[in-house]
Amino acid sequence: MRIKPPHWDKYGYFTAISCVALATFVFWLGRDQFAKGQWALLYLLLIMVIAGISGVRASILAAVLSFFAWDFFFLPPSYTLIIHDPKDWLSLFVFLFVAVVMGVQTGRMREREAEAIAREQETSLLNQLSAGLLTSNGTHGMAEMLLPKIVAMIGATRATLFLPDAAGKINVAFSVPPHQDADLEANSCATWVFQQNKAVGLPPVDSLTKMGIETWPISVHHANGTPCPDNHDLFLPLQTATQLEGVLHIGGRMDLHPYSFHEARLLVSVANLVSGFLERQRLEITASHARALHETELLKSTLISSVSHELKTPLAAVTASISSLRGEDVAWEPSEIRDELAVVEKDLLRLNDSITALLDLSRLKADAWKPRKDWFDIGEIIGTALRTLSPAERKRIILAVPQGLPALLLDYQQLARALQHLVENALAYSAAELPVRIGASTRGQEVHLWVEDTGPGILPHERERIFEQFFRGAGATLVPSGTGLGLAITAEIVRFHGGRIWVEGVQPHGARFVIALPRNDLAEQEQR
Image 1 (spheres, rainbow, N blue to C red):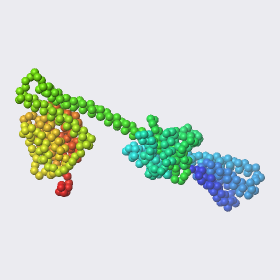
Image 2: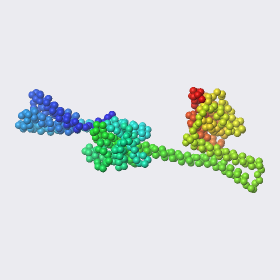
Image 3: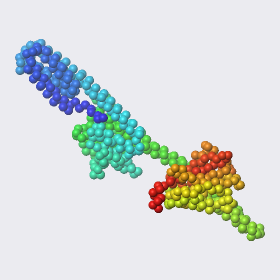
Image 4: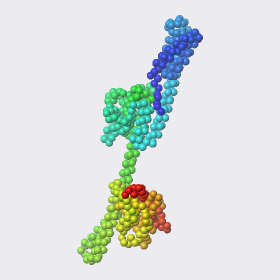
């Protein structure tokens, strides 16, 4: 849709002169067919038509021309402006009065109609732009949608969005057509508008009062003292209730005519829409940063509360054991010293496991632990994970891994660490005499690797949250130690490999953790 506001005076006078001249010639050819007074009615009809086409001023000109044409050609004596009959004088001036009144009224009606049509078009366009702004994704998406529509809508040579950088300097964010670095005049003018918070190129306020408008909804500069060339460009500050968001630059019209009041009013409304959009984007970013900061603080608090026990307890135990060994009031037997050192070693291993878990999770979250993939068999991964277990723990493992499973493209170390976390959890939550099962199978385009325990199981409403960091379910009371990071690390490793992980219930009790890894292209496997 293209806004076409009325420009009645552009060709109106020419239209009035041409129509009156042509009508007079036609009337003169048939001057013997009607009485002299009847020609006035035809001129009135012509004036109404001119008023409807070209507006008030052209109709007044047509009324004056018709006044003289009727007198000169159709009232005796012909071809002279002299009139002998007083009745003709009365008819002439009554005709002039009626013609002017009819022309003014008809022209104003036509202008009101054009004004209503222009407002309807503006409202429709603003509705379209508002809907587009609501669905726009980010500032660049908004500008990419809006600026081409502005250029097409009003026939502008260009449209540019200027936004401030972190230092407060105004720069081109988006332009249609693409911005030229050499356009220093536009940059200088946009900088002035941003610094002064005043618009450039709008009709002055005194011209608005004639239309019943006190002022524009944004500040308007005084004509003097601006660095902007007088080339009919518009520079509109994007002002909101809190701050200045940027500057919208609309280049001059392609037909070199200045923007009409209707077009300028529409562009001011568009600028206000853009201002609201930019403010909303800024507030959303601020709110997002605030949420991220809150989550960071919450994570720190959770980390301290969840990990402090895991770190302080083994440290306290180690400190107590070493202090006892160093004490001079007790004579230690070599066997007792070895037992105490074994306890110290166990506590230090527990401390090391907690720190390693924290480091692993932080590296995964920061994408610092990139997977180094190669082709490996599932059996190799399971063997590595079981190698860290004690002999007693290994006896509790029951394997259900069939032959012929396809090799997978994965990071050996990461996946072994993930499986190790699952196995250690299963052993910890299962009774000492009960087994833990590890199995694998092929399901379509995936290979499923699962670990099944015989513990209390996981409540249905906890099965999604169980993979969150520091979360420990209702059954965690059975294992007082633990950071709540093992399953979170496992989930991150699986995600890095493009797989899925979930937990299922086992009858009569227990839980089965399933890792689904994608099978890689067989052709790629053959190439290795």
